[in-house]
Length: 139
Image (cartoon, rainbow, N blue to C red; front, top):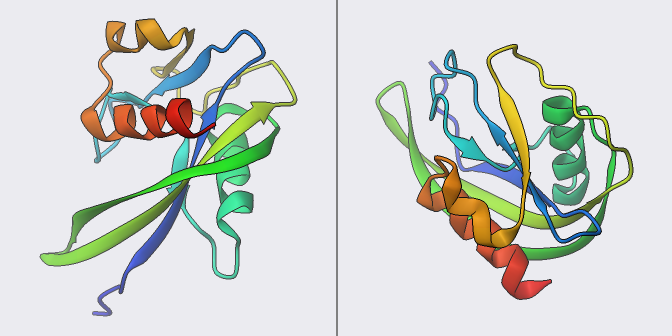
């Protein structure tokens, strides 16, 4: 069994022209944080830049096209891979949407465009809340 080394990830904090943020609720079938609200993010492909990865994850998870405005920060967490600790390093980007029609991959998912003052009206975890706060502070 091959144990992965550090993993690189990227997140897209999408903000529209009204200053609303896009949050997506994960499917109940997800192994990691089912039904929790957060920003589109995921692992980078081999050779992929973090900015390109954030835009690819945005497209895969919401159907939206976007453009990176700026990098707003970094996050890290430890996860378990078959009994082994893996360190995850994530680059976080503020993204401007270029399209509007959100298409979610799973029927039990949901999305919401929320003003920053309304973020805590959904079940967002502290990790995703910190990513959003990075975007609000550093954009």
